[in-house]
Image (cartoon, rainbow, N blue to C red; front, top):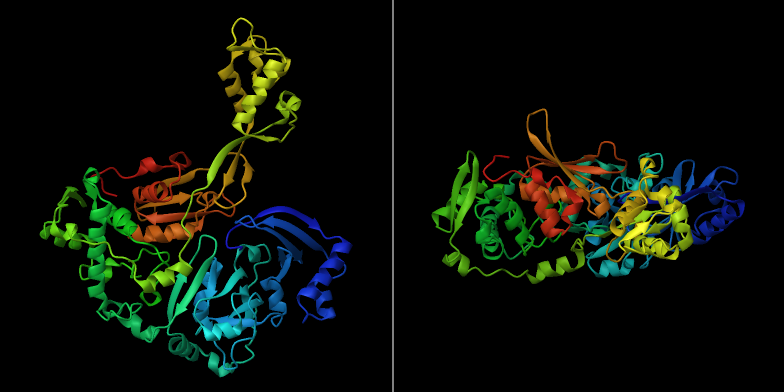
Length: 600
């Protein structure tokens, strides 16, 4: 819920009556809390503030702040403790344990799936569906997240610890935690495990043998899932030689990874030529063929093969396999395309030094004509149904206008005052009505409007006050809109509209030169459009086959920027325009894409 920045509506000191009510609500919500504990949590005289805010999804949340830290938050009349409170009262909620590598995914907005649980010798805590639970990491009882149980403990065990376990509401390191002093979890020894069992070697062995180390994750735009599925090989065994490993998410395919990767590479190549590449696209940069066409052929289910150290989100085949050319027998895209050229499927030429392009395709080649687009396997469909990301839909962005103090006289007759927000059609109607009501339309030329003192003061410059007496309708409306203050309304699918003053910042794409004399592509202002910088970075990392980083944007509060090695404006433009369908007018810097034949 707090994986992204929230918007604060108000921050006020709590009243005495509200303080007493909060104590009663806490006692009712958490019966295990003693009277003394409630008095410590909600002191009688110390400062306690009520912060009303809107989460990034639009949920209205009330947060209670004490000593500079959020201690409780209220959502839909339900009260929840924060991690700061749970660190002081670790036994307040039933606590489930997971592995440290899962924390990063929970912070990113993921839910916890049952295979990710560590089952202690005494068994899992007994809970019912809908119960509030804490989540801790192996070796430390200090909770790092809170969530709501998706099923009872009995149902968890009956399911074989498969499926969604907990809907996570708040985590250590999320934006609610950041609103406090940003302290780290204290070290609280587990109640059940013997300290000897917490040595690094013992924990690693337990992790390998009991969970069998396969992490499958699905990160939604605002709500994701963390899967941990079983794999009999240990992490040490699989990491020793990934090139000789087996893509064992499909237990029926025991072929070496390299052989499977070769097949996947050819499958996506043929799929792209048959379904996406057209004659008008030629000549086509080979990097564009891979990044914008071959990757785009695949669905993007959340199947990340942890032991292959593959990034999220990734482009995978319908069977859930992850493409990595380096793990194929070809090792490089150029070598693979040379092989395809030898089969006379395509013709590749170096149109400029060091830059290869596909200049011809034989669409009548038997391998293309006979290629059948594979359907997702039943197994992968089942996995994807519950964990696939919701497809991105761009927000509807509407320009608005705010009435400044200098124009209140013009708009007050229509019932508006300073700060009123209007759409362009409303402004037009108000101006027309004002002119007609005050008989300002020129009787000899109805295309002209006479300017009375109010219009003169509102829309004319000082040096025009005594020289301009009439204006055409279009000029009058244009000047009026220019004098109004800009605002805009953003509406995401299924959410309430959000109105903000000022102009919405476009997605900004720039090129920068680093100390190593290498170019990097930098993109910022993704968040106003509902795009997660980390997800965009991971997609570009795969498509561009280039390193990416996410860093705070200079001079912008709570905003991140994505950096991609090389000039990747073409890939970025394709993603934003063709796949996310964002209007071009909201993106600046697309002209910086490399021209055909120029080296990046």
